[in-house]
Length: 154
Image (cartoon, rainbow, N blue to C red; front, top):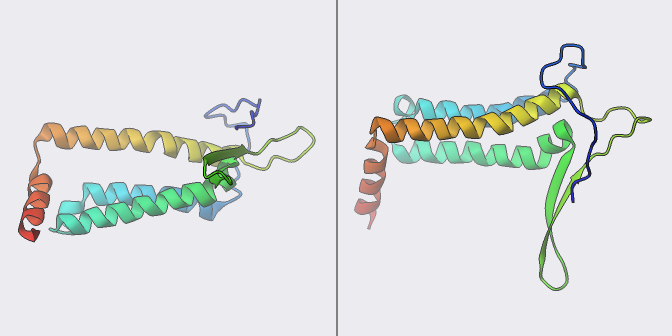
């Protein structure tokens, strides 16, 4: 399963390495999710159609999932995973992490690992805050419009 790395990394330490080895991966790691959140916040201004906003947000979140699983997880934190199906048809999940030995150079920069994990931890918290905000502000316009569209369709 996971290979343990015994190295502790402090969250905000100015003395540690701060170079970004993969700037494009870092950009797209943040771009898709931040774009989805901005679209969610400004969807009433961007389009009057609930469907357009929903599809845009879902496409951005799908791109974020693909980027995290296939690119940024490997480059920024040294993690990768996949599903393997054996001859019996049983599904096995394989998780790998890079093991850094003291003799080798560091393969993942601390700055990129911080960006990776902070984004993965803070964004779901923000989505929950958005959900409670909509729920407790009683702005059910989007729910009403989606039900109306489905009712007209059938």
